[in-house]
Amino acid sequence: MEISLIQAIIFGLFACLSSVPGMGGTTIGNYTLGRPLVAGLIVGLVMGDVKTGIIIGAAIQVVYIALVTPGGTVSADVRAISYIGIPLAMVAIKGLGLDPASTEGTGMAVALGSAVGTLGTVLFYGTATINLVWQHIGWKAVEKGKFNQLYVVDMVLPWISHFICSFLPTVIITIMGSDMVDIIKNYLPMDGIAMKTLFTVGSLLPAVGVGILLKQVASKPTDLLTFFFGFVLAALMGVNLIGAAVIGGFFAVILYNIRMLQFKTAHVSASDGTVYDDDDEEDI
Image (cartoon, rainbow, N blue to C red; front, side, top):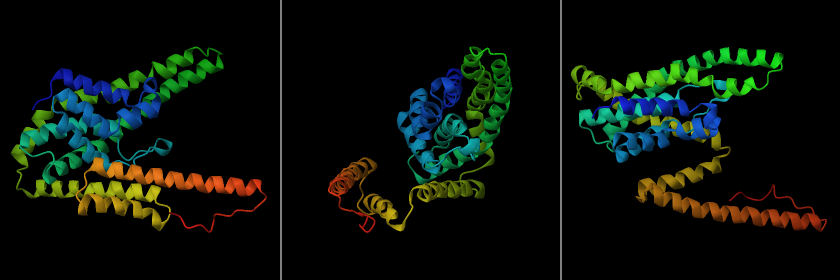
């Protein structure tokens, strides 16, 4: 499998759209188009193998499921992960003859995507640095009262930054994908220590992503019961992701109705002058 120039250009365009203000900023860009799960579908469509793209995107998404950029601080660049890492992972997996759904295939995808994401932080901060120039132009426009120029500063000039630090690197790296796989084949044999280490590290990284997610959303020990229940459904009962999502939806509706009933009870008690304290109620 090779990446053509047209495909590389499309990946470069989506890498830009993943963060420019014209695509709704972080909501539509970074937190939608830039997510590996969504990018896996897009890359799969572009490369003509949707199944492999989705499998690789889902595997990489687990690692970065809780990734946020507080104050512009990032540990990995999701644009690079999504539109450089996923295409390269697809080329590598196909070139090495691996099954994308196998442990080796997902391990290769996760490890390669993580490596690209770490290197992509240079591109992220490069974009931010160039944007400081446009910010300076914007302040000068404000001082002179030329507020109409702010639209250009916000919607047009950032494209230059993304062209330099997102579009060009994505196109250049992805179009060299097949050559990189050939290097891997020649210098890193599948039964060698380097590749085995790569697969091992890649298989462990999803646990890091889930751990970060649990740290953010689990405020008390009982919150972990939801995740343990999902683990029982998937690992012990053999329920697939769709089935687990449907079952989770049922429990979400039940919990919502219980919370609404408690709210109505508290409202009625307050209107009657009765003090209702639900702090002692056991969380369900």
